[in-house]
Image (cartoon, rainbow, N blue to C red; front, side, top):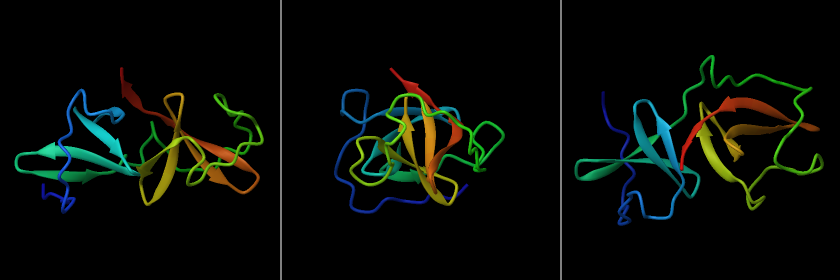
Length: 115
């Protein structure tokens, strides 16, 4: 498997670096400025939460958002961390991926946040 390298990344990720840790594909990644980073040898890889049965990318118009006001709109600066998922960006809300879609937000499944 080839690496998708995040260039010019001087920050050292680790358990005390301050970034949200996500258990993903058998290892721990770090959410950092809308990226999912994985320290790997002498560089940092860019990872993405894959679209899967656990983390689908479909529309869920009847999803009742937990963890925020029903009128909340996800987007840059909304207070929820952006997470790369498939070919789009979702937002981390109480261990779930939320995706803004028209007049609602879709539930794109749980992710394992390391506490």
